[in-house]
Image (cartoon, rainbow over all chains, first blue to last red; front, side, top):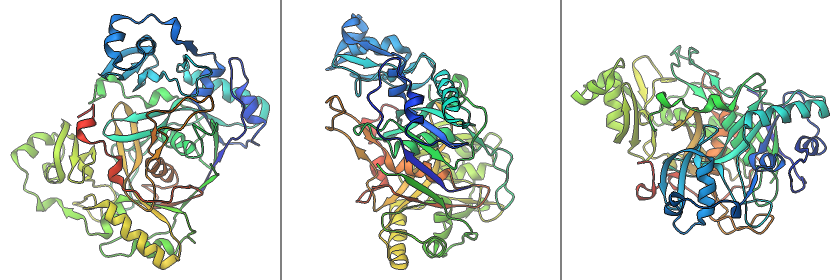
Length: 242
Length: 242
């Protein structure tokens, strides 16, 4: 394993629908072959126009029931983005999103939204977003890089969020140690490491929700390959916690 | 936010009870003020003599019932380390440990154990372990560093483990954004970031369970302060998933 560098991408402007996020990143950092470019979901969603207005949702009875002190129109948007509600304690909702992720508010969030009264939704297909960014970065920077679209997820039992990969392109998202042996020869039977989630978390350390640093570059990780963030989701039948 | 470097600590020998892990690390890396030294739980436990023999456990009826194809003596050790079993599907057990963490096998593991027929348990008090390592590193390296004791935890809903902090000393484990505002002025109401877990995960990226790299140094993180890994555990009454 080599030393890693985790480099913040500074100075990006506020992102709006149609903006070329890859071009803004490539103009800021000299990308190198094998770099992992981690981009916060929020800017990807905004560039893809995944922004809605509170006033465009008429709260259902269920949304009003789950809202507690929260704006029931926001809860309505959450329910529209949710395939299924996993846990609810008004106004907190943990839901399975249409993309298959289980997270707070089905990924719907008002922070860093473009205007008062708007909400940002997850990209429709974050793996596809990562693939598009990767293709565009290769075109602009001439380097074959990997791309992760990251989001901040809470975890059962532990306080605080860590950033995880909700979209990926050009990298192996899991390091599979099954069948390898430790120094004593003991076979590691069940170990898979969620490398893409650890990369997303490492990138978060140099990002800033308040400072407007929505991307980072990780250099030195030997992860080039093919992979999808969908590989990081446990299929329902194998999950002890659904 | 500054650029981070994540530096593997190579060439450590196999660790046994009584070994001075801090001295081995300080002899390998020139530590600097503000560095975060992440040490894998396995070497901390081994240096503290937290190794037991399968043959020293007489399986209870419950251990035999939960064992499935697994050695019931290992399950017995897991039950002894567990304050409570959270989920079980033989031979998989998710338990709350005596230290308060919820993880697979109550942290009991045979991989990288010192000998055939032995198991490594979690440190009795991983925060205290981190404090001891930090004090010793200051003595040896003359630098005020932070220490994280890390372990690989699985997560509900997501495939693969990520490394998290089970012990901490000399750092703020959470970055609390509650009350800060985004660029548009929207107040971040509930955001806390589990920085210590993201640091542990970043360190894992340069460690190797199979290659014998059980520690890493993270340089450039501005996290010095006071904190405990216990702050990362959700109190039972606030937890939606217990």
